[in-house]
Image (cartoon, rainbow, N blue to C red; front, side, top):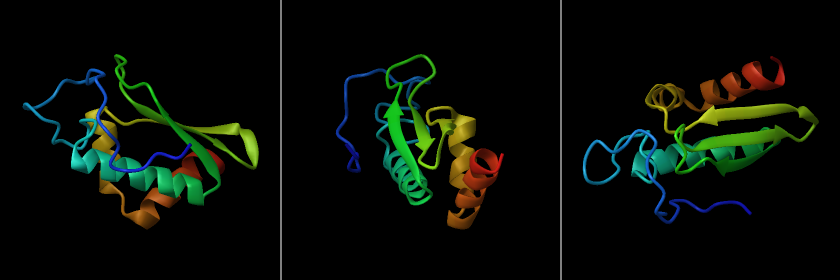
Length: 109
C-alpha cells in the first residue's frame, strides 16, 4: 500500500529526539520538510523501478526507506531518514542529482 503524504502522526518515539515541542527539522518525522522529502524520495524510487517501503519508526536508528529494484531483486536501496546528516544530504540534491545518486549508487554500483 502506497503511503499518502503528509502521513498521520503515530505515537512512536523520535530517533534523535525533537529540537522543540513539535517536529520541524528535516530529520524529524512528520515535520513538513521531512514528509515532503520522504514523498520525493518514494516518488523517485517508484519512477526508477523500485518498490519502496517505510520501516523502523520508533527504533533507535529511526525510520528508513528500503526498496527492492524490480529488475533485479538483489539490488536493494536502503536509506535512514531520521539521521540528520543523511537527511541534509538528500535535501541538498535537486531532482536530477537525486535520480543520478540512486542510479549510480544502487543500480549501477
